[in-house]
Amino acid sequence: MRIGILGTGNVGRALAAGWGGAGHEVVLGSRRPGAPEVRAALVPVLGENVRVSDLDAAVADAEVVVNATPGTVSVPLLGSVGPAALAGKVLLDVAVGFGADGTLYHLVESLGEELQRTFPATRVVKTLCTVDAGVMVAPGSLDGPSTVFLSGDDEGAKRTVGGLLRDLGWTADSVLDLGGIGTARGQEHFALLFLGIAGALGSYGFNVRVVPPTNG
Figure 1 (cartoon, one colour):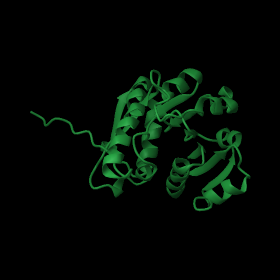
Figure 2 (figure 1 turned 180 degrees about the vertical axis):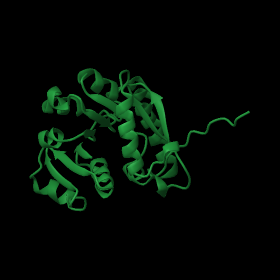
Figure 3 (figure 1 turned 60 degrees about the vertical axis):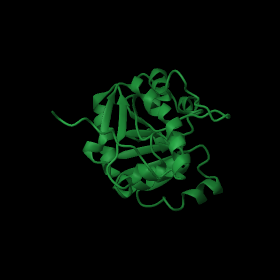
Figure 4 (figure 1 turned 90 degrees about the vertical axis):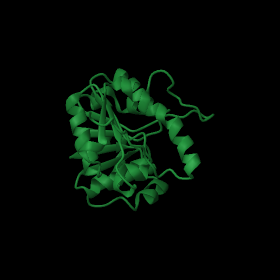
């Protein structure tokens, strides 16, 4: 599958390495693809299945577009690519926005919802924003099973994203579909609890597991 990842930070690089290693064709989209510091940061992940280009080129041929940009700038950045370029594509959104004071940027409407409202012809799926970049691509590194979430209005898009999650090592029974894109609010607001847990543990390398009641 052809995947365009917008954003070349820790999350973008980790996902590019994970999906590239699984055999997908990955293009990392950067606002400054030729900048020496960008190229230097991407050296460990660039290879046969992963390359870097500008944002427009990363989106153009992609079957799935991944938003791994800072959540505070995601909407205008994707707007610069244009609704027409995103129309019909699956947009896998992993971003969470934090204000300068450390508070959540999207307090009422989630970023996932805003993206779906702003780009109505695009099929937005929120996932992976409840775990650190390292856990995103190596869930098996944890001491036991854990849970990753899906939010989105398009069932076909969620199936596509579910397949990509499995390529990163998430088993089918670890993926919990929360429902429509409105449920992305819960995923994004979990960031506050995530930071609290990280502070208590002294590590970002953890996840949570949803434990259902016993039958009968």
